[in-house]
Length: 126
Image (cartoon, rainbow, N blue to C red; front, side, top):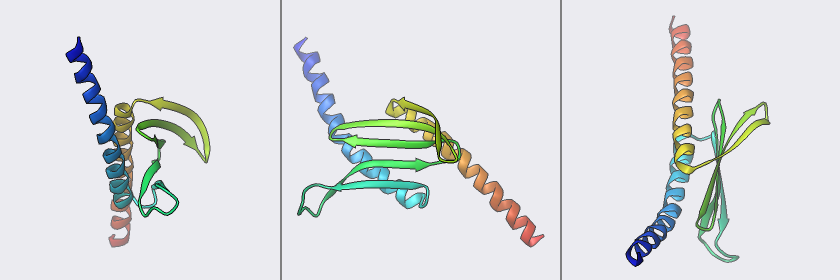
C-alpha cells in the first residue's frame, strides 16, 4: 500500500510540473499558429518580476469558444456554445475531452477556410 501511495503522489507531482509547461507551450503554439482566434492572458509573477505565467487562454472557433484557466497547479477547461456573443451552453470538460473537441473544431474551421479560399481563387482566376 505504501508503494502505491508513493507512486501516486509521484505522478501527481510530475503532472503538476508538466501542466505548467504544457499550458505555456499550448499558449505559445496557438498564438503563433492562429492569430486573431486566440487570446492569452498573462500575469506577472511579482510586482517587479520580468517573468510571467499564463492565467487563461481563450480560443474562438466557428462552433464553440474554448476557455482554459490556470490557477497555480490546477487547470480548468470550458467549452461554450456562443452565438453572436451570447453563450447558449456552457460545459466544464476534462482536459482530454476539451482538447479532443478543440482539435475537431479546428479541423472544421480549417476545412471551411480552405473551401472559401479555393472558391475565391477559382472565382478570381476564373
